Image (tube, rainbow, N blue to C red; front, side):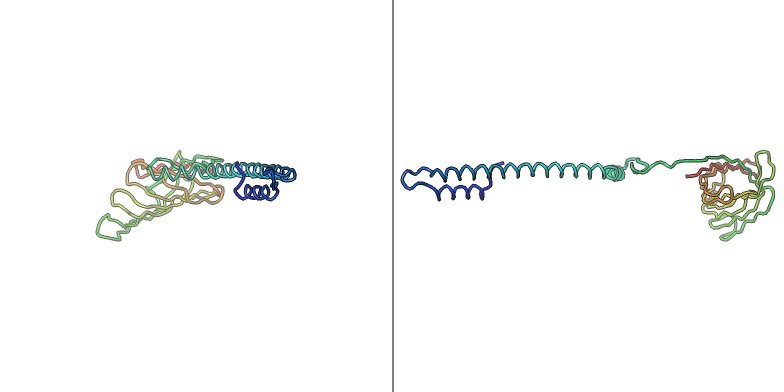
Length: 222
């Protein structure tokens, strides 16, 4: 790095002040002072250059850390804009499953109470309400509790929005979601009590063709 204009000007003035009157050569004192001035100028320039290199390295390091820290969000935003199928941001951890259990039950639609309320035009239509309280069975078709809730028709003949509670002797599980008129449906576990407290998960429900429904629960602690 070259000395600054200000430093060079100061040295030049010092030389001129000590020039010999007859010979035009530098006076010995001026020569000594001139060397000292040059040495100080060069030393200051070297220090400035060293400090500048250190600052550049620090700035580069900080910039690299900022880029690395922002990289997941950058990738996520680019994926969203370009239509990429990135499911979650890179920094988001996967859900851990602990104490996972499976419970298979059967809702018995041939017994209990049930009622359909026609709230719109005559016959099945959007907004109709179906309320039920049915026995809950195990796989051997023995009674183990109750299956109680309601469904509201959202698209007639296609699906309804439902919520109900599977009640056991030692706890209960609440599920909710869209249930299809035919085929398998998957609903979310939105709450639990008793021995199931703290569990979440999902439940599949599928008609068996005899007014009963097989309900398979997958529960876990997050």
